[in-house]
Length: 185
Image (cartoon, rainbow, N blue to C red):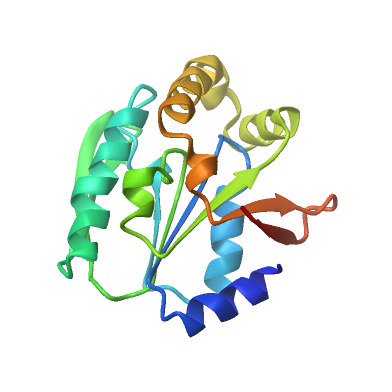
């Protein structure tokens, strides 16, 4: 299945909420941006904007469920709190209206609890060496000293939530990095 095929399915189903998960550097943001171009969404929420620092993965997962996904699933506005990585402090709240199209992407986006509150879940699969290279090219020396610490949090979360098993599709990037193929789980 191509991203265009996926958009056709989302449109036909009148879907509103898509979750995109995968490990750091897997290409989640790139896939979310590609999907956004094809399926204009009211909002894209990136967990990179929510994690409260390098040890905040578990907190962000709970925050997204209780503050953003659960209210929207109940027909109420959702919200999320931005983290200011420069100052190390919580930033402003952002409101997301119910019913509008929403793409949520980031490590920890896809779990059984989250998937039950969304229309579609995608797991992005990328080899470890490619992921690490991308992440360090993207964030450089800011990320380098935290790579192992963050990867350990990812591993604990994946072991606890098994996001791959809750995904409707696994996304695999082409060798040239120019397109995606989505495989049903």
